[in-house]
Image (tube, rainbow, N blue to C red; front, side, top):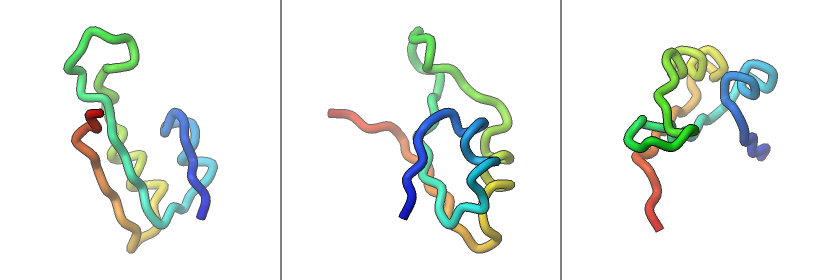
Length: 63
């Protein structure tokens, strides 16, 4: 198994096709610089995935 972390727009196209994509995207709920919606990311994720791959989206992780 290989775990990739980083900006998905930069990482996924170079390491695909992926068997599984687990994402916890920013939802734009805070004023933090990194918490901004990224348009088009689901389309890019699906393009980097194998035809029968899994795509899991988290709702945020709280301590």
